[in-house]
Length: 453
Image (cartoon, rainbow, N blue to C red; front, side):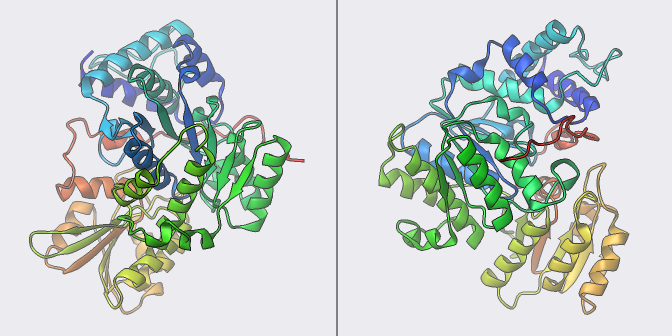
C-alpha cells in the first residue's frame, strides 16, 4: 500500500461518520494485541485548551529526557500532525504500513473493509457497526507508539470523553482543562451534562487535574472524582501568578494559555513521584512550547501582520477578542471569518465583529460551513461602521486583503489549516488531507451518561 492509497482508505472510513461508544475500539485494540496496555498515558479532555495543554506537557517531558508520544486532533493541514513522537510527525511509510495492517484487522474482525487502493470507496456491506475513521486512527496510533517505545503518551480526547475512542486507556493521570458550551448536539445542552461526558475519563483511583471554573460543571467533576476515589487537583486562576509561572514568558499568547500552563504544571507535580521532572525541564519546556494556529502571529515579507486563531466556539471567540485588545490595543484589523454552522455562529460574530475595521466573510472548506451571507447580516448589526464583504473562498478574501496592514483570521481550525496552506506557512498535501477532518453526520450515544451520585 502506498501513502496515497492509505490516505484514500482513511477517506473511505468517513462513510461511517462518527459514533460515540467504546465497543469497536476495544474490539479493534484486542485484535491489535491491546497496545494500550504497554504504554503510559496522560489523558486530556476539556472544551478548550486541550491541544495547547498537550503541547505543553509534551514539551516539558521531552525536555526531561523522555520519549514522548503526542496524539491530537484535528490536524491543521496534514494527517501526520495527529501522531507525533518527540514532535516528529509519523513518517509516510509508517502511515502506509500501519493503515495496511489496520485494513487486515478490519477484515478479520468485521468481515469486510474498503479496498486499500485507488478504487477505495464505501464498503458494499458497510454497517453502522463498522469502526469509524477516528476509532481506526486511535488504534493505529497506539500501535505506532508501542513500536516507537514511547516512555509516555500525551493523549487527547476527540469528542467528549466517556464514550470517546481514546477512553480505552488507563492513564497515570487525567486532565479536564475546562467545561464550556460546545458540541451540545452530542454532549448535552447544559454545562453539567457536558461535564458528565468529560468526567467519563476519570478512572478509579487515578488522579484528575482540572481548571474548570463554572461551579455547576466543577460540582459534577468533584462528585465523579469522589465517587471513584480519584484524587482531585483544582487549578485556579491565581495559580497562574505563582512561581514558576509568574516568571515565565510563554511563547503562546493569551491569559488563557497561562491557565493551560498552570494545569499542565499541576499534572507534572502530581506525577512527580512516578516521573520526576526537574525545574529546568519545566521552565525550558514551557518557554519553548510550539502550537500553531492558536493566536499565532505571522509577519509577512510585505510587512503585513496576521493573527491566526482557531477560535471555534463562543468561549474561543471571547478569548480571542480579549487577547487581541490586550496585545494589539487600538488596532482595527481586517477580520477574515469563517465558521461551521453547527457552532453558535451568530454569537461568535457578535463577539468578533466589533474588533474589525473590515470584515471578510468566507466559507469554511467543509460540508458543515455556515454561509457567508448569514454571517454578514450579523456582523453588520454588530459593527455598523465596518466594511463587510462576502467571498466565495478564503483565497479570494486573502487576495482582496493583500494590501491591508493587519489581518485576523479566525472561526474554525479547518479555516486556519487552509490559511496556513495558502500563506505557505505549511506545505500543502497532495491528497488534500484537511478533508480527513470531515467525519460526516455523527450518531449520538445509544445510552445516556450515568447520573453521578
